[in-house]
Image 1 (cartoon, helix red, strand yellow):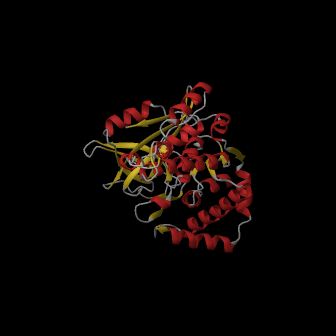
Image 2: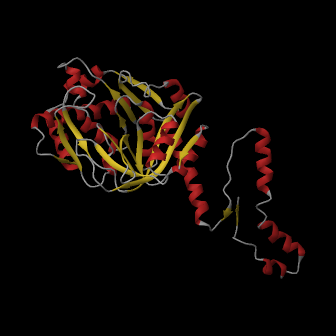
Length: 373
């Protein structure tokens, strides 16, 4: 609903003196007439639509239209995404379980179910030259701690090369994974060395979610396609003195949206998971952020979104992603409202405020969106 100018040039049209010419100029500005006409027909036929109202030279209307175009591009990307599901769910983590049929029906995503033996076979074929090239990439991308043992760096690099090969072989655009394996076996060796490689993939907009959180891998993919990053995270504590919620997670992160350089550090033991190995330590860039969760509720799938700020302050340097987030409604009200909406405990966090674009995407996908504000 865009008319040529902000207002009709009344004096000019009235000065024409010829009502024929005046009618022509009037019709050139007669945009608002068509909007209820079209909307009426769409309503009666059950066709979904939205309206952008303004004038051609108005910047805000082109931002709205640009948002719709971008949302359509993201919807297209989701329909053509191939998400790998490697391993199995984290046992007993009921909120993470999901219906792949519903997910595919809503987003159009193809799910490629992968076996650990496929990754191991690729890993067994990695050459010494490929390992060294990946180690060089680690040092170029991360702040590699001097505490990291050479053997652990090489182990992670070998797995990272194999992950790249897996992504290429199956043309994956995202992945969710989890595995344990019997203590000391080959699969445990593989799965305890994936964090660095999965972080590299995530930073290259091939998001990888741990704990086989398929819904969150989808949320991360949405954020990545909007250019906002999308890092795997969960709330773990509240600072009532500073009125912030602390979010973080072990496992892969989105290194491209970090505040400063990303640390690659050793962990003597993974929390809630078997084994030990290298891990990522980073804080999400300070400034505006958007949180997104793909939620599977009783009545179907919907998007849960919130906007806040990543703020500086003390965090735990425990080999995880760790950030402090402040919300306009306060930490207490936010946690209550976010939790009651029913998401799994993971979410994707990206930079910038893009809730409006996510709302447009939800419209195109014909699913609800809930905004916590």
